[in-house]
Image 1 (cartoon, rainbow, N blue to C red):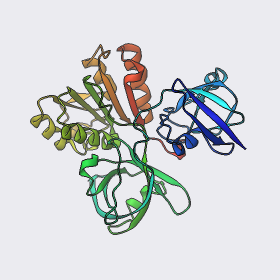
Image 2 (image 1 turned 180 degrees about the horizontal axis):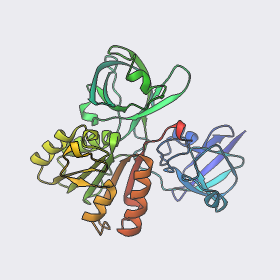
Image 3 (image 1 turned 90 degrees about the horizontal axis):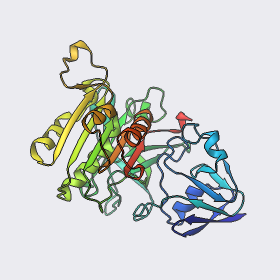
Length: 339
């Protein structure tokens, strides 16, 4: 059975089969709903059911609580319609600009950036190109049917190869391979581009870039894109890690700070040991932003990293620092294992 989904306030309409999610049907129809993880963990695709009924699949309470669901809120990545529905959600202009592609790729390079972070450079087939926006991600299609998502760490104009930053998660079906048996010239299949995390170029607001750990990957792509645009917007990057070695491209960030007059770099370490001899900022990375910016009402924030960092940043920036919710753009690194 097929139902009709109407999006307000845009008025866009599309069909959704009873056995598919509203988000999947929207993407298939080229309707730009916001989304991130696509597995009910991050909450990026949350919206309101104005009329009609949906059934939710598994999801995390922090992404959609029972109270929110009772109030008519929905996670469109795990909501399947059981009637025609009208939903209220802010569409993302440009998220459907480039078509999804399924492509083979060959590993051109593997380089350890730190003890537990691997750079993987992917070579696409000759005469093939993946069009995407800086900040978006791809999904590897594994042999058992599972998928794993990684943000592209290079801007689209630097697409001779697609680079990823992969952190080793012990026991992970993909990352265990990356750090043991995977080698250069291996073939990996992926689908992309995915995600609504990308630069809003129609604004001249100053930018706060917030990264934790390998959340730096899409932030790096955003920076490269801003540099390519010759943007004169004021940009401040806050990158947080537990120890200094977690800031695995610290030297690159310092090069940007030296070369770009409108760019500042603030590294933040939360759990430095005495032998690290750390003399920089300490504590939680989002708290460093608050210490420097009591009023964020005129800013845009682009945040990427662990869900706890993103959730805390959104809560405190919008609650304490007057950041408008619609100016907080985030990509929380989650996986199906988080459910």
